[in-house]
Image (cartoon, rainbow, N blue to C red; front, side):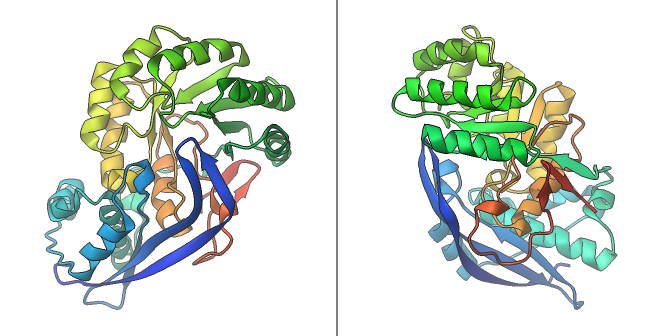
Length: 342
């Protein structure tokens, strides 16, 4: 596999309507579909979907790197993860591109060897994966309608974006949603690092009665999680603060968060994600896998990662409905809050 032909195709996909977070709106996704061919007729496919607002490189950086890309692969299938890390070391500063190339390599290996990722890594994977429904920064009427829709569609966990300029608006919407969905559905929230430390403590104390599963990235700086933990009973989850294996290890060893939100695309691919999962599970931390608004091609890595986890929770993989157009038919449809694999 040392001699490979790499080609790529850019894509541009519109969302049916903008998805709003405290960081801004996502209305279009751009990325690259990467193809790798070796000596056989097999073709490995991967996706690079940078999202600089959430911690990756830019689209333009990936495009520039792809123009003059050179791969020097020396893979040892008996030591696959370290050999992939060595082979792709030059792309560490381009995590989305590294993820796409790694995915194409793994896909090609599986096709040529007529095997699966589960067999390749010798890790059993679940057949069903629970996913959460998502509610962006909507006005109260829209948020209520969306909550009712997701509940009717069978979702048992809802994730709600918060971080409006006036927290009272966040609180009002969360209270209405909790009333609408009842006490049996799980409710998790995501501030995308919008609040200050004092705001986070004050805001979280106000909503403790709403039975929040966890708050995702209340502040931008992970080191302030230690102080916030002492001021609220709501578990803290780290997302934007985890963009490398070293980031995750720091959080785990300092016991800064109860939940790790892992985005394989933002982490540089599946192998980095697997290393973090191993470290987190040894320390009894909860892990939630989420997509980065990529297509079903790139999302397949996140779905595999979600399927191998020991903890059974809802993951953030329900994004296909947001796209107006697609590249390939989604092989991972969500039905009643569940993705069935195989």
